[in-house]
Amino acid sequence: PEALLEKKIATYREKLEEHPDRFAYRFQLARHLHLRGAADNEDAAKEALKRLEDLHDDYPDRPIITSYYGAAMVLSAKRQFFTWDKMDHLKEGRSLLNQAIEQADDPYLPRLFRGITAAHLPKKLDQREAAFEDLQWAVKHASEKLEKDVIRPDQAAAAHYHFAHLLA
Figure: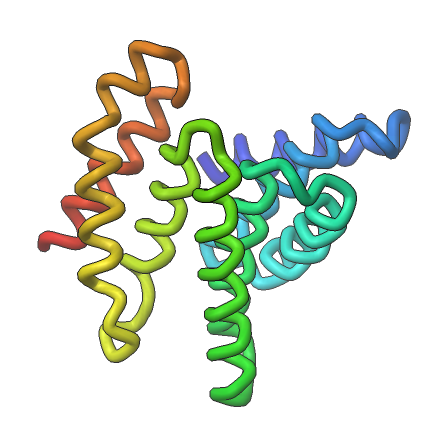
């Protein structure tokens, strides 16, 4: 999957050179960089955060952008040196995820993102119960959302995977 992810990143970089203002290419590049960053590639995580911030500035009313930006902000908390900076990034990311849930016509993906990010936070931050609620809700609604084409199969699988990881 890593080689495929790198190929997709390269493809969207090329497409953006030809069409720098195209929303879909900007979003897909930022999304794939975020996925790469979530797999502990610090450079990709930093670039994803910047690109998602720019997208959020341009499209503040798109819950999917707000969701990814919030998740990237939470992820960036671990790269901060000072505790107060870590907490600021964490709070801002959680706030963005909550905002995305409120914005969305269907809150499935923002809740899934909020649950996944909370599930991977250190236990001392006491977010396990919030993660459990969001991921349990996502698992419960996954089949229905798949049938209605609200989510992709890999997103339903992610809900199950992260919920099982939380229970382990």
